[in-house]
Structure formats: C-alpha cells, structure tokens
Image (cartoon, rainbow, N blue to C red):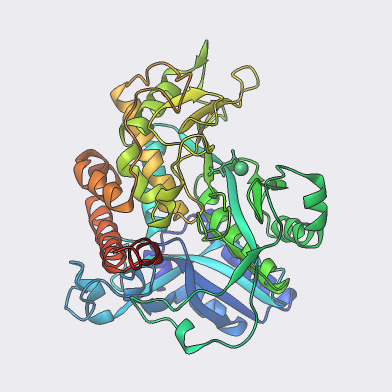
Length: 477
Ligand code: GLU
Ligand code: MG
C-alpha cells in the first residue's frame, strides 16, 4: 500500500479527484504543479513538481523540511530545530528532518497567471503517518469535525480589504536584503490613488485594468466572487465572496490572497494584506468573517422562531467569551492592533449588535430569508484563515454547548461598557495564556507552539528601536 493510501485519510471524493487530476494533467498539457502547504502564518510554501512526477507524489507524498512550521514571520526558526524533538516535543520533527506533504487533490487549480502551472494544497503527516500537530489545515479539520459531531457545518463568507501600491523599481540595495530575525528595509511605496472617496465609480474605473483582470482570475480559480470595490483609504480595495462550506472557506482565502498579489505583481503593482501600512493618511484593512452554522439538511441553524435561534445566541456568546484570547489568531501581527480604534469602522471592544458596523460582532441578514448570520469584524486580512476560523468555530461551539446568552445588542458600540480588545499582540498573547478553555478546545500542542512563535516576534519587536522613538526623543532630550 502507498503512503497516501495508508496514511492520507483520503475519502472517496479525494480518490476520485486524484483520478481526474492525473487525466487532466495529460489532457490540458500541464507542465508543472506547485505542491504547497500552509504554514503557521497562512502563507503557502512548497515545491514545484514536474507533471510526470505527479502520480508518484499523489501516491507517496512529498517530503518537506519540518522547520517550516517553526518559523516566525521573519523566517527565523524559533525552536531548537536540531534537537531530537525539533525543540517542539515531537520526535518526528527532530534534527530539522522531513515531514510529508499529502496533496489534497480536491484543491487542484490551474493558475491563470502562470501558463501550464497547476496548484495543489497538502495536509501534513509525520513520516510514520501521524498528523503533524501544528498543521493549520489539520487544526481547522479538527474544529470542523467537532461541529460535525453536533450535526453542524461552518459556512463562511469572505470580505477582505487590501492596499494596492506602486512600488519603486530597480535592483535591491544591500540594506533591503532579509536576514532571519531582521527583514531588510522595505521599498518606498505610494498608493494607486488619493483615497477617501468611498465606493467611487470613478476610482473603480481608474483601477479597471487591474480590477477586471483580478475578477476574471478569481472566477477562473473557482472562487465564488461576489463583488470587487474600491474601499475608503488611499489605494484600498475590497473583495467579497458568496458563502463557502467548511475547509473550502479557508482554502479560498489563501488562494485569493495569492491571486491578488500575483495579478498585481504582473501589473507592476504591490498588493499587501498588511493591516496598516505606513502610508500617509492610511486606513486600516480588515478581514470581516461572515459566519453561520448549517444543519446537514441545509437549514441555517442561526434562524429561530423570533430572530436568532438558541444555537445562534450561544454561538455569539461563545465568540464573545473567547474573543480576547482568540485575537492572537484573528490578529496575529504587531501591526494589526493599531487598527482597533473607535469611530473607525473597526471594533475596539468585545460586544455584539444588530447591524452596526462599530460592533465586533455584527448580526446581519434576515431570519425570513434564511441568511441570518454573524459578521466578526475583529480580524485582519493577514491572519492565517485556518487558525482564525478554527478558533472562532470552537469558541462559538463552546457557547452553544454551555447554552450561554450573549446579552442585549449594544446600541452604541463605541460607548457601551465592555471589555476592550487587546491593544497589542503582547496583550493578546497574555489573554491566550489566560484562556485555558480555548487552549483545550483548539488543542494545547498547537496553541503552545503558536504562542511561542508569537512571543518570539513580540520579543524582537520590543527590542527594536522604532522611527517613532527616534523622532520623538532624539532632538528633545
Ligand atoms: N477598513 C475597516 C476595518 O478596518 C472596515 C470598513 C468597512 O468595510 O466597513 O475593518
Ligand atoms: Mg470594507
């Protein structure tokens, strides 16, 4: 039996998709396939496999270095990778050895921007076949299984903002070269427009060559694109999708982000999902995650006789209960916490409200139409979608299990007394340390591993002298 047959955990759908994939590669003249895995930061890393090698990899998997899951955002491995347990307590990850990518053939796409190139996401296994405990895709799979035990399925709608920037051309200066733990100087950038003309048709027209190409590309990738629009800030754009089920929602986020950046790059632009780039008059970018739970028969479990059902109210209350700790997953960067400001359309405290864009949890849609759902506005677009969705799902289900009540809708979200969202990644990591319930629900191994990586990032940030300090103090004192 092959490694994938024995340990891949493929269902019939995946086996059938693999069969079709082998055929497609021949028929469509695909030359190479990017076989990737999603790292802790929601970024795809992997290897490009020549088409004639693909059948072997669909059977045997593809080895990849285990340190990929022990790195911070600067590419620095924060655990002792050469120790027998990789510094992470897992024998199969020792000595910076291999783990195995098991491709998920249902994720296969042909990349519209790269001729003859296919794309596949993988799940991760240790060489003995056991799942890698820090695999974000595996973490979301486990959370979805928890929902399935309750006869519930997660349905998500995506709403992501990003900045579109002109970037200075030319060869790299040595000061721009990265070192693990010390990224090089960022390029000078400027937004593609002046901004603050919300949803302006004129601005959209000016960006038409890029926006139209982006829409074509996303549709060709099978992403159920709903809208593309110019947002508020200079160079800020937004895309939204129709509802997606389960794992497909998170898969769509990584594919969508890759597509946005690739289409922009080919247009000579830089698209960034960084929350709050250092630009004059910048407006933060959010990732609003619309979510509901469905019963297997397709009925929306949030719809009750009189508005939100008990499941819906419990889910809302669970999201509130674990919101501060869950921020580490929804807002995993130092930068993202600068977004939580009052009167900005981003939330600043932990509360919910009916259709109010100042609230962290905005209840929207209609019970009659059946599309009643919760929009969590806390997230930043740089979040790892698997971890962000998993954290929200297990938190919401916890509220359902406990039969919690979310209390009344907040009429004045920026004035109502409620716990504040963390104002820094440091505070968020501390909140996660304090939420032993969320740790148990999400898996202690994953939570401790991820928190360790975030602590390493925070420590580097806190040790760095910023240009703010230089400007504030150098000439003053
Ligand atoms: N940019 C706002 C945020 O940071 C959201 C604006 C909106 O779409 O309502 O979340
Ligand atoms: Mg928006």
